[in-house]
Image 1 (tube, protein in one colour):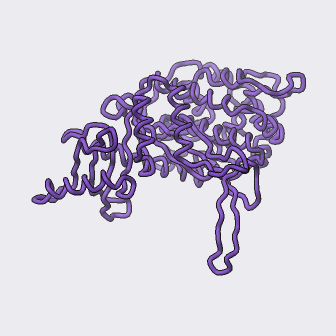
Image 2 (tube, rainbow, N blue to C red; image 1 turned 60 degrees about the vertical axis):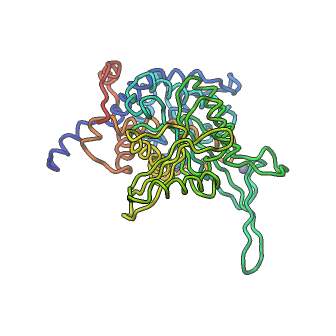
Length: 436
Ligand SMILES: [Zn+2]
């Protein structure tokens, strides 16, 4: 046990910004160059700030948990802060940070693909490092969680791509239309971290579409994007019961991916009743908490099902059924159940954390749809670095801070502590990062 005094002593000398940069450099040493080299849509003669200044400022805004663009402009308006950013980016002449209007103008015109390419670079670097090899499913497949969430809701039409939902007031019969933007995420799960590898916005092509876009349609597009970007990556798709269907199974076959999804009876009735019948035959004598059955026919294929009685967080026991094309054996059944349950992480560490604790991703930083998308991808980029920083930085692990404290000590460091030349030299040295 360390005493409170010892904590104060330890903390006095910590520059959290330096700690953050150490982790960023360790995992993504060319990040700043990538930010600098994105395709800039602006007229080059009017540019005050390079893309790396704008994007790095935004990463810092997200890292420090600042909720609005205005707060950011106020908080970062300090000599030390400007100097620190200039040092990191190698710009001695930087004497202001971009105003939030400048940032939003830039993000309104930037092709979302440019930021997606930066995220791809980061994910590929992580995979190259081989730090997470032990988290592959059955020693081979990377677990990719698929999940959709709502981002923004408006009372009035926001743009022609908005999803629309009609609500009818039961008493008055009055109809209200809500306008929304949703996104579908693919997240790589390793240990208790989830890293966004691709995003697909669920959106209507135009206002006049007869059928609105939906999660499964977006999945087809998302999957194609993942296949093109990570051609030979062995993937196992982890989805909720919505994904337990022919279109997803056949797409996985085509791409040589595996799948492991939550299964609910109503999703495929024939499979559910066969599984139930087999269970009754096999299961009549003993009551076990774990039951599985391979090779149940479904269309042109066979599927494998497993059922487990598991304790939920609230202490009650719940039955979980999963459907997969991975062979279930006595040896791997419990492991596969744990993999299936890991999908919850995208809700716990994933979206809930991003919405409520970290970044307020539902707050629209801009009304421009392209800028909204770019802000979203910037949240995901930041979230990759944030998790590595919080799980990898030794000092943060010993000091056990809450999410809010972690953001605020980082903000404090950026605003008040000057990075020294020794710091900058030290950043060039290799470090070791352990996640245990
Ligand atoms: Zn819209």
